[in-house]
Image 1 (cartoon, one colour):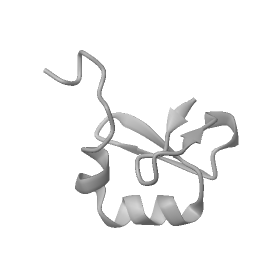
Image 2 (cartoon, helix red, strand yellow):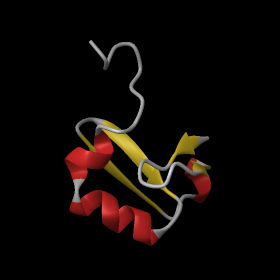
Image 3 (tube, one colour):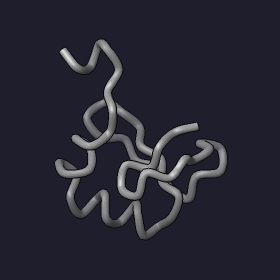
Image 4 (cartoon, one colour):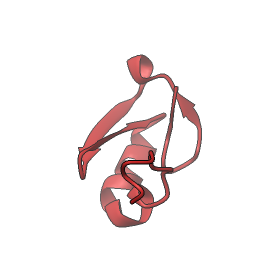
Length: 57
C-alpha cells in the first residue's frame, strides 16, 4: 500500500485512481480530485510524503 500525499489515505497501487511521477518518485492517488490538487501544487504535496533513507540525505 502507498499513501495518497494529498489526503493521507492508503492506496493500493493496482487500484489507484491516478498516479504521477515527480522528482523520480511515483505518487498514487485515491481520487482524481487528489491527483488534481497534487499537480496544482507539486512542491507542497511532494514534500509531505515520507522519504526513504537514501532520499532523505
